[in-house]
Image (cartoon, rainbow, N blue to C red; front, top):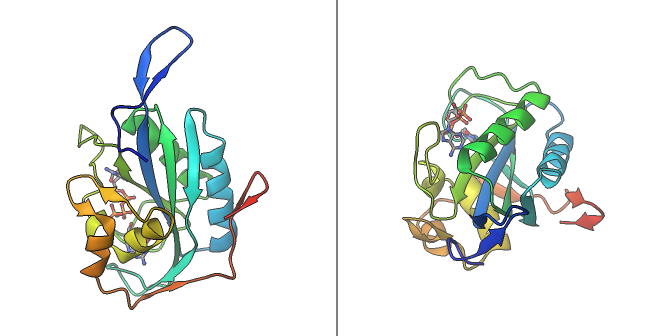
Length: 187
Ligand SMILES: Nc1ncnc2c1ncn2[C@@H]1O[C@H](COP(=O)(O)OP(=O)(O)OP(=O)(O)O)[C@@H](O)[C@H]1O
Ligand SMILES: Nc1nc2c(c(=O)[nH]1)N=C(CO)CN2
């Protein structure tokens, strides 16, 4: 899939809207994380103008940073969208709030965290850092992403496969016993 901005959508008013590849990272280590991830992907799939392309396997991952806390379950969603990055981030925050996410400790435990890893070649603007400034060094983001998108390129950092080669992936385990289902499709 292209990173855009060469794919174009025309809305009902005839406006041209670039279609961007969107990569989202979801993580949970409080509550029923498996159900939370399942439902969160469902909310993303229900988001107007955000088309899910693929959902990665779920990984159990050792916490990176923060206080002592339980392991996370992480997954990555690849989508296509004409939405602005800040609109996608607002939607991510609204979904987090459905699961009672309270922003407290930096890198601390959370029912649900949704990071906007990349929106095509879009870069930072007021209110959103793009690509996500820590995604390039996080195995819990890059390994699941690579599973579903072997040719993936992290804008500004290069091929995800090369980034993964340089990372310690010891703390992450693929949980093939957990499946995410969207509209009858099992990922
Ligand atoms: N690309 C992005 N994805 C998610 N949040 C972002 C992004 N860019 C800026 N933010 C902002 O970063 C702030 C901190 O986000 P959050 O509380 O999710 O951090 P965190 O998950 O603890 O740590 P990290 O940012 O390292 O994943 C939020 O106010 C959020 O709006
Ligand atoms: N394993 C793991 N560690 C983390 C995670 C996460 O999702 N998984 N999220 C963090 C802040 O976003 C900080 N540390």
